[in-house]
Image 1 (tube, one colour):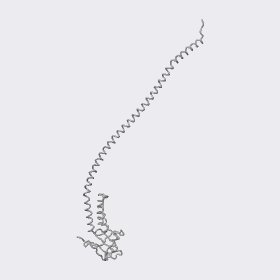
Image 2 (image 1 turned 30 degrees about the horizontal axis):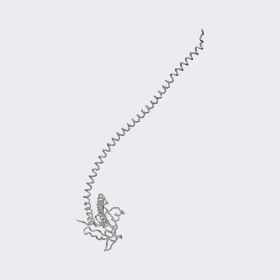
Image 3 (image 1 turned 180 degrees about the vertical axis):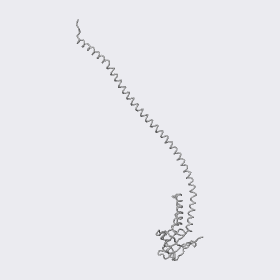
Image 4 (image 1 turned 45 degrees about the vertical axis):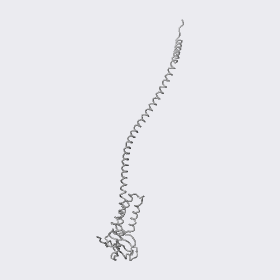
Length: 254
């Protein structure tokens, strides 16, 4: 009987081991490939899930943003509705005011005409200073009243402005040049207006002077004793001298 040597036994074991490993690999390789495929599929599925989750998060953020925008729009629209209501009320008030303006316009036009007529009569009866300028102002007012391109408010403003100018004459002193009939001859003189209290004139050479008499409504010549005072008054009116007391004739009216 032969006895197996250890080397032979070792080779035999190795052979059986290789055979067993080969068979094991034959069965495990498909399982490993299946596992790899499953893992790859799971990885792809996880990627898909992650992508879907990211999309959901993005849509959720968009939804929250839209909700905030809608809430803001609702507040804005509510404010706009209030503004529209206020504008509608203002429009109604404006329409009512326009109707009232039409009525006032019909009433104020005759009033302005009467005011201009009264101003014209006043100027005609007043001290005759700056006669041409004041008559032209009244003529311009009458012409303006016939114009359709001038608004009633502007017409009224112009009429009131003319009244203001006439009022200012009563509290100012003024010197201006003009022509005056002296001994039947037109001569260049300087007029001195002291409010509406006195209207005087003096020739350029200061040789002749006169004053308007309110009672007789005529010019009266003054003697040379008033020469210095009138010359002084003219210089004061021209701001060449400081204001000072003047001695000039003043007509006493009832």
